[in-house]
Image (cartoon, rainbow over all chains, first blue to last red; front, side):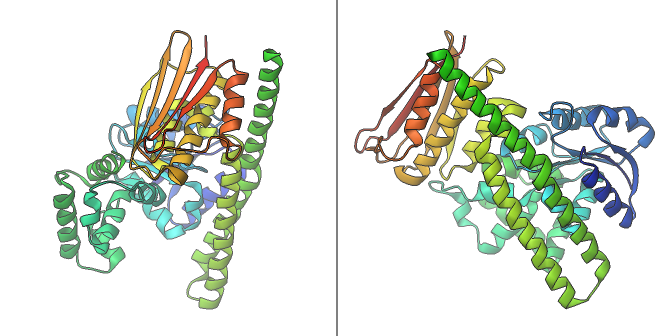
Length: 214
Length: 203
């Protein structure tokens, strides 16, 4: 798998590149800003681009714009956006059209190596990776007549895993249950919340996010 | 007089923004890199339980430090506002509130930075007060830019009767809004919810 990195801190850029190389990824571009990433995209041919959300020159929205731009120009390339702050507003903006091949994680997550690598792989093949803290924040809201209250503790766990982008198999592996059991939980959750359960894994990520936000 | 108050406010804001940036590019970035090194070490170490335990603990300490630094940095300056404007920043505030918040924005593009920052703090402080004191079940946030004014209104359906003299939060908000030539008003009848309304001139 080929990865392009755009991160202005040399320390982190190199650390990230080594981590990915250790795990067998081919790092084909190491960029200090979004402009360089754009220039190198055609040659680097990445499966996934990992971007810091704050990039030079102004450190405002360069990273986000680059991510949205890459999604539009190279639909087969996944984008994984890393940030030191989690902003639900940004998650919604990034995922607004589709969660296919999109990730948004707190930068700290790179130190949980197996989880982080799994997220990179998911995004590279068109899946999603939403930071778990975003989901838990949305779940923590006090709602009147809350359908979420009808979920069993286990279903809540499954909902959280589903919303961060895990497949049914991924959920089954994590909870050490059978694939069939995971599928049953998922369809029961959709039934209780009244969300249509058709579509890809990333489509259901978006459906759950929109449900939790409303 | 008003000009000098605005200048003082701006200078303070710039300084806080610089500090936030220093933290973001300095200590926070270094801690993340350090944690990444520990993560790589742990991946290479294999099944040495004692060493893995020590590493996990060190990583946890770093995570805790990062959380604390993030809170400090957020308190200094809401970087999301500078980077992405009011709609994104307010959506995040609304999502973090403990009760459901309906957000209605009628804005045409970005406003002057001081105006955006003031509006952001009015909403932020009001939502914090709602979570802490109002016993509300929902709230609305409305922003409307019209006739050279930004009108910000935060309304909850809680118990009302808020003590507007308590703490420095509301006083600080009023100062900030008044320095920009605007005004802040609060209606909070007992049993009738609370309405905070700021009108900020913005050309």
